[in-house]
Length: 198
Image (spheres, one colour):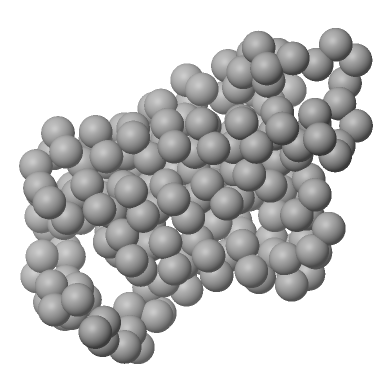
């Protein structure tokens, strides 16, 4: 039976929920982070980092809490959106994917703490984000949303090309950052000791 989460774990998980809220709307705070009309959000980066630092279970929980807060009406999604109506949004699949991204990233790292595994896990997490989110978007447009004229599966993936380079770079940075924190900070902290008893 899984033990209850400690106050420290809940606090750090809450911090990642807050980081996701900021990452979704970073361009509202830093307008120059729009390149070629494409906003450089940090949601995928923080979802990967949550899994890498918090572990699979707590990382996924923090992303689930983020999704529920937004669905409850808090303006924490992109463009300060919120509300249950986002369930019908073609891009809501990306929000769901953050849960799986954090979980899988954390699960891979839990088995091996080498820097190569951190980077690989981060890239796998990013891939899950793209696969789940893009397929959800395609089927949403085909089944219930108003699809652009001539919309195809190929077009859905073409839309994902502009943010891909920055997400690859940020995923690698997240892996390196998490590995550095593991070796320099977390391995000596009470939080890491609590995680090992999970």
